[in-house]
Length: 458
Image (cartoon, rainbow, N blue to C red; front, top):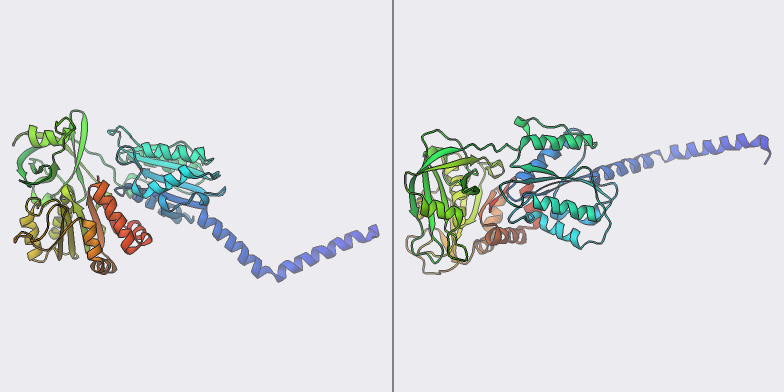
């Protein structure tokens, strides 16, 4: 080619390229938008591991902040994240609690196991907020274990694990500051608008008014109702707990009453060590102190376990001393005068001996305050005591759900809230597994994300 013609050829090719791009402009624009949308949808994952709901509440608040700033972010429980999703362009924000003896919450166990058995190399970036309570020896243990596992597979931490002691607002605000410094469009929220309230318990002096054995003759350990009174006006709501410091250690109990009853009520079951000595908390509350003795305690706010929709139906499920938290929810709804239907499902050992507050439950069922009442007894069978109202079966609460699955689905179709209170191991985990079998794991996750599946387990 003649050198003089080179500029003309280049100009011709450039013109052809522009013409081609113009012809395919609609398809190219659609491709670019889809690419950007795909990147945005998978750019930020907010994974939560939550037992009582605080981690979920914080994760939901973080997502709202990101969305309000124009960022698309996906909120998901950790168990639904596959290691293969964590690619080079992925940013993962984790908020998780620690439960039991330094263990993972139920909705984070599978994720941790999958990471542990994964041979993949992770190229994502992540930040982790660990919730805990310094009074427990394994403070934030699972958060640190999860961080170490992610780093061992090649994931890059944006900054070190941030530990939060009892929802300390200053630490949560610092979390937002660190995220902002790492390129996330968020601002540290003000204390009054964070979406999760600070637990700022201060000691109060309450007197033991009455202690009552509720299960005389039971094949299980003794269960006591403790009723306390205080000369000071105190405020709490259903879902809150009471903290009692005993010999430098802390014990936490679900509150069974409402302030309108002018007393603080909770349940304690005796527990014994291998040598036969009683547990620290139950021994002190059920054997050591006497009536009129003064107890120093703290009221702990627990907004993750508040009733999210009092006008909607509620399915209350629990066992043992978990009835305390269930009773508070029922009583609070009755105080409001306007509330949705309530269905109580409760499990214990013996129909003859393990029926705490049975007279009140019978009355609530007789007058229609409880629209449905089901009992499961693991160590007794029909014929049931004549005074037993509602329906009873032999077995456990999860078996009631299987028998009444049609009623369960009908209640949920009306917008019902599920409130689960009692032992985490056994009843809590088995009930969660049964719900997922009956109505689908994805649906249970949706209920949790929308605040309609509330767990108060211990």
